[in-house]
Length: 203
Image (tube, rainbow, N blue to C red):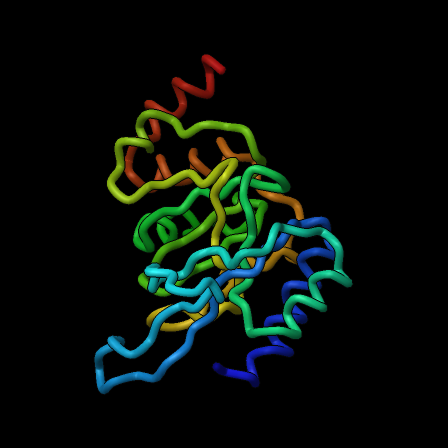
């Protein structure tokens, strides 16, 4: 158990709840590195005999209550999970596509928070309840997290590192991005601009 993680994770989880983002405790990393291997490390959710070694929810419901958050995160250095489908959905893409979408004026045009997880997975927080355009859905590695899903939130430790913000929530006043504006940036990055323009004209 990494006890010095408690204050940092508790502060982050409380801040999210205070801004209206539901949070849920996730299993926390235990064990030690074995050289370059991670055989001795796993995520512990507290369930006896739980076979899941990767990041997953702990047996606690999501909450918006900052006092409940502070109480839960005093127990263990839980991973901070942000359930999707409530305040926002999350469009998760490979790093190359995420970085390309934010080149040029993308940092301004995205107009929403962007988190980056170890393994170079970029997570764009967007307004909930919208789909993925076919041109983007066919791209390998594009995942839309909606109702019933979740993402690990900064500064949660993961295998290989820590989740971080590329564009912080404060940068756009804690508002998620317009989903099709973000997808348009990605389609432009993929060279699908003309088809994207046709979709926008028909919308």
